[in-house]
Length: 73
Image (cartoon, rainbow, N blue to C red; front, top):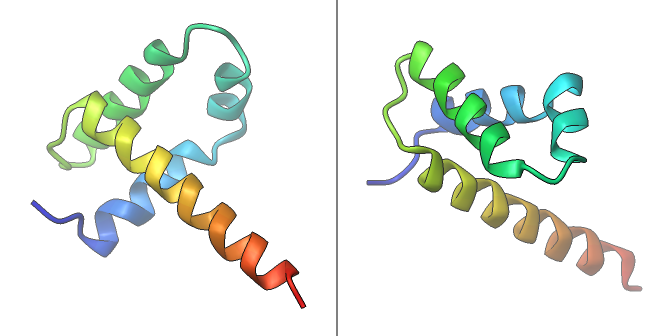
């Protein structure tokens, strides 16, 4: 099932939270993805933590590609 824009925006909002980013600096990242998943479930978005982790990895990859492409002149 494709991700809705609303779902992606909610994911980015939670993922971008300073406390989440601080926790991601630690070694136990799966617990952070579980926390992100719980917060998104509270907002009514039904996906498991592995799907959300994969989406975050995909978004990071796409961001890096665009950033690298725009940096090339």
